[in-house]
Image (cartoon, rainbow, N blue to C red; front, top):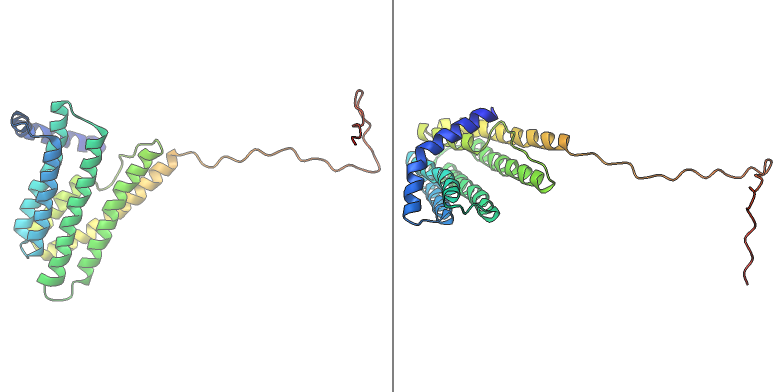
Length: 231
């Protein structure tokens, strides 16, 4: 599955390569692209909150596409850095959170009726998507890698976009699927990383000291003498 994801990513990068080269010619920095991406995702959340799922879906898809542009632009410009990767990951989470906030408002305010299930699924999906990223980051913090996962960000983007395009009934079903799979991915990653980490090592134990047997006193070895008394 991971090989299939990498193949799709390479194909997608080939499609957006002309856009990346044009941004480079214009002198646009990767950070500017990342900031534009989160701004577009926030706009998508606002559009969804106003009740326009189709418009929000299209805008969110555009905002998510910036995630491919900033990394490729950094590689093209030779400015790849840990700080850039840090910003990119944080902005991705913030962009998704903005969309989910817009969805929550949409179901509570824009949709009449009883939509507690949808809002609960949104909360669970947000928890799953954030903890999925956290487990990977924590694994890297202890010197391990974690690229496994039933459902990662590209799949979340595709499912959310499709659900919004097809309407709130389908979107509710999509949220149920996302809530289940994102949290399953978190558990999968926890198990995967835990299996690679060493367990607790038993602390060194000193040999037990035998109690003296009064019936069988131990004779001192040659050279042993009683300690001198000190005043």
